[in-house]
Image (cartoon, helix red, strand yellow):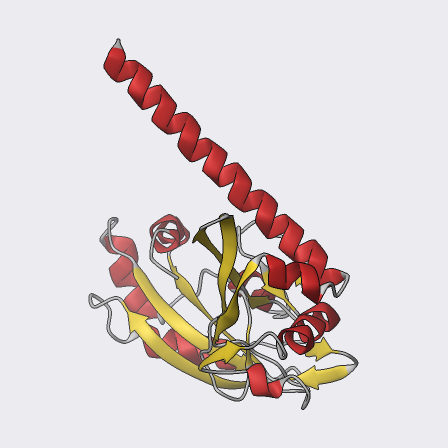
Length: 241
């Protein structure tokens, strides 16, 4: 009985902490949207660590890429940069994004007086491009299909072995016009080594639409898995992004 009570207390404590984190995240996003840098400063560890952020404008570019410590004097400028691009609520993938769809992590950690924003972080897969959350990126691809059939010989081999599958993780970039300008294979299944290049060849033929930020077109990239056959996609979804 005592053990059950301890476990229940622990679960309630964890649930309460999650609610508090979610509330602070929501309040931070709201404060950034209204450019209330004073409120952000009160609920953040300053200097604030930022990691791999993306910005295109000259005013905001000093905050982009690598690691930086944002001082109290610089914080209002960073808040303004984020507010201009907009932070978007978590979509189906559960990922916060900003601007054209760049993933954003607001890391919230315990502090002496409760919780605080510890750092802001994003991901860079290409130094000269915005890294886009995969679901948003593929929505700009007119001919995108997650199931990418291989050549006839490979397809027969996969179909004959009913438990076989082929997959590849691709890095795909769209130039400022929306055309595919780079495709790189990051990972592939070892059973059918030729499949990765076949998937990359199919990706180079995709047609896209440009990503636009503040009426300016930007280069954009993302990484995601494709595979064959369709039943393999469930396995692919379990692979880390």
